[in-house]
Image 1 (cartoon, rainbow, N blue to C red):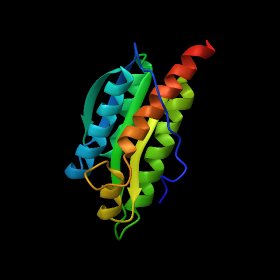
Image 2 (image 1 turned 135 degrees about the vertical axis):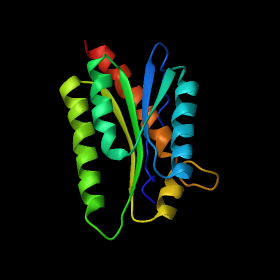
Image 3 (image 1 turned 60 degrees about the vertical axis):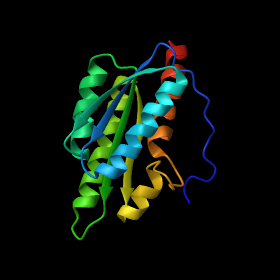
Image 4 (image 1 turned 90 degrees about the vertical axis):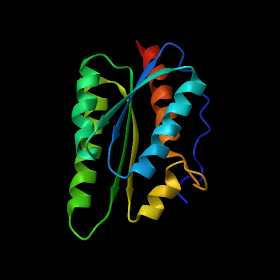
Length: 155
């Protein structure tokens, strides 16, 4: 399982507003990812706002707009499940590059909570649902808060 060796982040998000941008496909998995991100924000003392977009491909443009608006932490959540066409590779690659570009070009914390899985079962196992082995929504929010606080110390 990929979660082995994950850091145990204890983050303090006091004073931060975390912008959670979440796609709308795969309701069950998305509900788990969003719940994990919100729970992490609340436990860290960070305010949060949830913005829904149609799919994963739309995550980078909304993250870009939030970064331009001065967001200090963005969490991008979504699910891309492999099918029988190259769609998976195109969407996964574009989303990953787009979110990375936003983080680098604006020096803003972007938590990557986009699941790229072969099956729906793999996605559910990472969504933070009852019985899941991982909570990638929580992990993405913790990472974004941690990086945002680090960036704030760098001036």
